[in-house]
Length: 203
Image 1 (cartoon, rainbow, N blue to C red):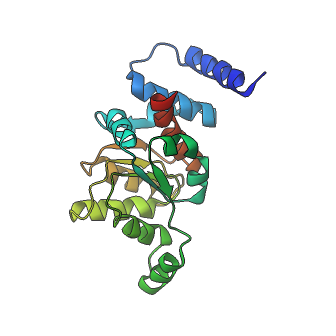
Image 2 (image 1 turned 90 degrees about the vertical axis):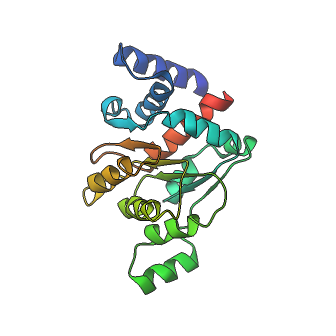
Image 3 (image 1 turned 30 degrees about the vertical axis):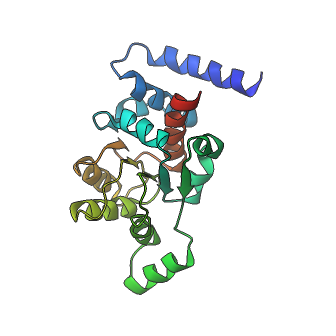
């Protein structure tokens, strides 16, 4: 089978196994893409969408949004040719020498400092966080201080320490979000969400 045939067949299986659902069509496309990436049907119930989150994200991407990720894995998984067609870019600042130095000097995580660096970008911003709860915590701090207003936050870090708490902060921040409740998530999930939004525009 050709790669696209395999993908289409996989999505057919996912659709059949999901059955009838009340999930909105734009949100459902994201849910299916995440399930396709993880083979985990729990995402049908634990992915939470702020009102009109997908519409806002799609409109922002059409305007040539800048995506900032917390790991190079998320950045690597995003379909950059499709993003480039829309005039968008993706960055990950975690490995930048200035971020590492500042993190050491201030006793912060590089993920938190990278969020501060990204906040200086003067373009519509989408944050895609798949690994670092501290990135979400810093985002919430900057939002509360009226220092940033992201178009969308994808909050799907995976793990056990501050993961649930950081996601709850984002869901209460007033900023549009797509969040995976609980401990599940990961860089692959964050990239899958971005790709699903891109596919809704370009395919």
